[in-house]
View 1 (cartoon, chains in turn purple, cyan):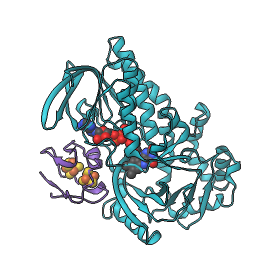
View 2: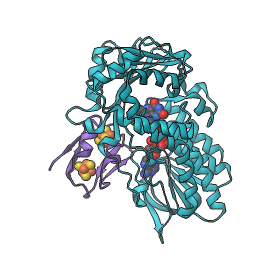
View 3: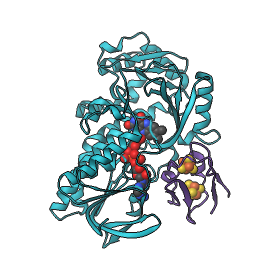
View 4: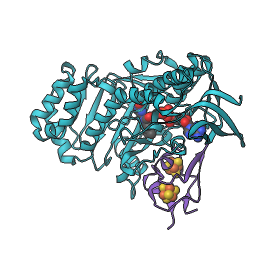
Length: 57
Length: 404
Ligand SMILES: Cc1cc2nc3c(=O)[nH]c(=O)nc-3n(C[C@H](O)[C@H](O)[C@H](O)COP(=O)(O)OP(=O)(O)OC[C@H]3O[C@@H](n4cnc5c(N)ncnc54)[C@H](O)[C@@H]3O)c2cc1C
Ligand code: SF4
Ligand code: SF4
């Protein structure tokens, strides 16, 4: 998994899920899960309203 | 929960609840699942809605109406104010809702109509057989289960996966999403009769800041910026700056975040055995970001088409084309027009926004029709007329209703 979601910052809004090109993210009740489809493109981190996501390349 | 339904609705927002209610009222066997444990919470909405359109779906109830708005005050980057009163402000004249209560009231309507509602129940996949969606794989309290249905309605909001599972790519590009943050604040001192909008690339690149009254001395103070302009600074950072400068002594009582699709109509919202509605179908308005009404309108159409399809025992794409056609000919036309305006709006510099505002300064809007307003705008800004020529062709062709 190449992204890290700061669960203390995240407002579980699902915006990142909506932009992820391969559909690697899932909003499960109140937290974000990422699977191995993630390509580290960084789009989710860019658009997160609160900057809760970090991508390592 | 049974093993088989006529229709399974995924997501209990406005789109899902109206779809479930409509289908259940027609006599279909309906299951609506919602992954949250509390419908409507957390809120991802500024909660503004047009009165006229709301009434088409539900009788207004004081339990979920916080404020009754008479007009809008729009501020350009240099502080020029344009005021629009009741008769002309269009979509902005209406109510400010309490979505937590409103969404539950809508879900309850669907339950009263006979739909089964299950919370803390998440769709994790679709059952697909011979190219037809035949039900939903769901998880309830950690247990996975397959539930079959003749039709599935995907009403699963901005984070929708239902469409993708059926092969419809609904992923949004950064430029097709407004990334938003909002504070519910006490003590802003705003006039509770107005919705306030603040424009400018410095304060809200590719979007705007809103202040919507929520009754007493409360207000939703929020921002949407275009996803493509987010990055170094995020929506919440811009919002904090605005609030510190504008309402330094107001108190924050709640934080809401979210994303609104502003892509305009997507290519396809149906598959064999499946319809997408609301934010899942990216049906929110690209210029205002409003999606409650369009979600309910689409939900209603989908519920009606579900009934037709199930009673004729045909859930193929050619049958469901009825849904696709009906929403595109109604809300779809307005979404397309708003997209034209949005594409132009995000290209404006602050100087251009200011000069547009100056050309409208001192105009008494309450006595003007929308056409007069546009005329006043175009008289002072010839280039605008050229940029929006497609819009006019559409308006003349379809005599669009701007009051939504
Ligand atoms: C900050 C912000 C401000 C806004 N302001 C306004 C405004 O002032 N006026 C306006 O009209 N619109 C506004 N909108 C847009 C509006 O909130 C949405 O368009 C509207 O809620 C869409 O309704 P919906 O039913 O399609 O989706 P939603 O209301 O998002 O509901 C979708 C539901 O599906 C559930 N769900 C998702 N996935 C699953 C799954 N796998 N299984 C089960 N359940 C699932 C979710 O938990 C959610 O409850 C705003 C949006 C934002 C983010
Ligand atoms: S976009 Fe940000 S705040 Fe929203 S769910 Fe994703 S990580 Fe959390
Ligand atoms: S980095 Fe790209 S691929 Fe990975 S989760 Fe984020 S948006 Fe999806």
